[in-house]
Length: 298
Image 1 (cartoon, helix red, strand yellow):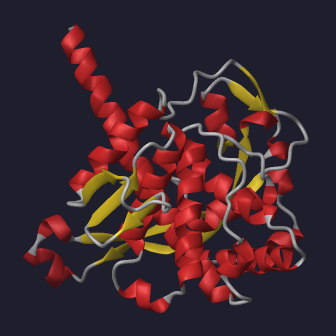
Image 2: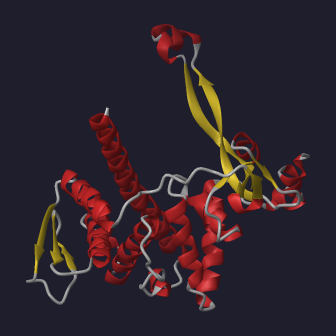
Image 3: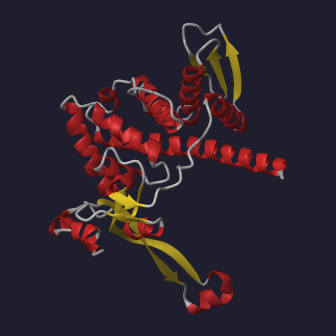
């Protein structure tokens, strides 16, 4: 197959594309604000969906994937798909992302002689355009199921509670906080008893997000609306990632930024980073449990 599917998507417009991670984020945030101001709150929902699917990507690349192909579920480069036994269909348009360029900073001879193990240092030189394709743009061998967080909410609940305890956060279940579903007190979370498994899991994530984000300097730098929206967005992302039917994120997204692009960009970054930490913890717990079960069988 020719490289048309991969390289051919590059055009003279590439020279006008943002060249740094900050420029990529700024351009996407500007576009998102325009959509929100036009009443399209589903645009942010698409970005949050992308965060649940691609939490190992940088914020800039998540925004790029969501903008160019909102329904993408699994992306890889042209040759990576080849390795997996699949080919990009002819004529498919690649999803442009930013790939880091790593260079070597060489130390002066006299410095290198002092410690030969640290003669050269890898440094980020810049970024280049790279192209990935969604699985829906490919054909070929069937792929194994993606290793997602498996099992029902009960298993995910146990993993989440374990992570909360590892953070040194006290967790209690009580009816005294009614009608609130959950409360975050800074080092302690209270959850209303009697919720459905899905509601309880979402509430746990929401309150954990407050503990991770809003109990330090950030609390004084943001409004209650922003804090609640960030926590709800993180609960939405985690819920989507573990397979819950979350509908749409319930917060009123347009209040997230009040026309302030820098605030929206900052919120998206902390939402993405916090979600990635929680999902990584859940996946790590899943892997540890699986290893333990295999050891018992052996």
